Length: 480
Image (tube, rainbow, N blue to C red; front, side):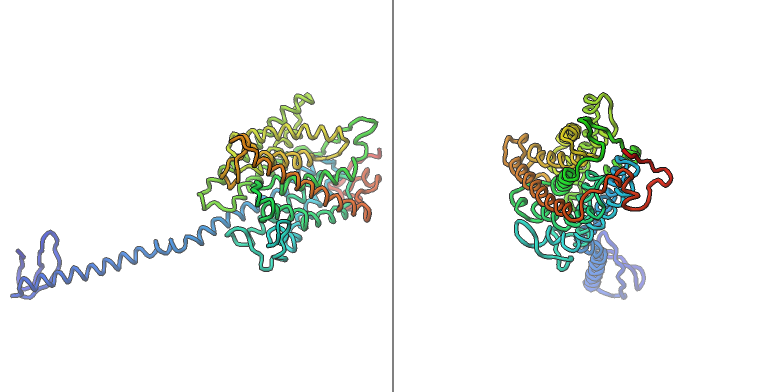
């Protein structure tokens, strides 16, 4: 029963008390009606309050797509910055592995080939690589006008990431042709490979070209970047000929690098940059919470470590000493080899791939000396040989569906399908680069010339080509 005190008061109904004002003599039914009205009125306020509190949640859901895009964009941009930093690594490795008198020359080439790659990839390279066209080449998006990207990323972020890759492919060649190539000839070469050769191979594999339709797997560029640069380095090195005094009277004369600590720093920078090169090729981390990027990073690290160890053991057995330069190139060999399969294989396979790469880099370096092919920094053993090996490793260790791979590797289910596609893609890509760059180098040789004079080579390209010294007052050169 309702209780009241005085002429006005509070009405108690059941377990809850509602502040219903009443007049004396008011009937129970009227008082009950007022209480129900109060309940409805407060229910409306509670509903309104719930909507207000839910507004941020609804807003978060509406904003989830821009937030996801922003996260993926930042991821790719940071990866692009790391790949750009690899230019410093290439510069330090190449400078350390050659003689002091050619240091300014090799570093200038590293600066200029990235600048050239950026400009050429902007003007025509991106269109050839990612534009709409046919299975061979793209034809839209020149100068990035109305250019489109194959992902949901902002086109400018995607372009920067791909331009950094283009620069990496171009700079590989500098090491193989170091200490004897004319600087103007190098400028001509780097324009062609950045504008035409690299983008065409990229279109075949990453731009929707004929190899991509066949299921060819190259996640981060063992073929697109490293085989392209390595094959071009081999062709150019063979056309240049060896450095003076390198092979005389049937003997092989070692030409030690002038600064091994500098080269070591370069290798560590490259190793660090590879964590942008490979994991960044996921083009985002939002779709799976970064699971694939984490696997790629782990595989990258394991392969590098395994390559360094096996190269050390191999050169120790062959040469009697654990040569640091070979250890460093073994690390780079493992990184190059895992670049194609990094998203397609399990960690145990990445160790095997890197370990084999470390052995191959030593054997390939010894084979080049037997063939009298002078590669001052090991560009061909590291990038070409292990670019091919890493590409084929996809067909051996790859797991169907992982990272988007089309088929299983031979060691997974015994099938040769994926391995056959990998072999086809590697052979055709290498043949195209060899033929096209052979024509380019031949044309340069017949016009302005590829090689500096013997006098300039002996004195050093720093003074002859640039009129300066890397170590002023300490230059040492020979006259024989």
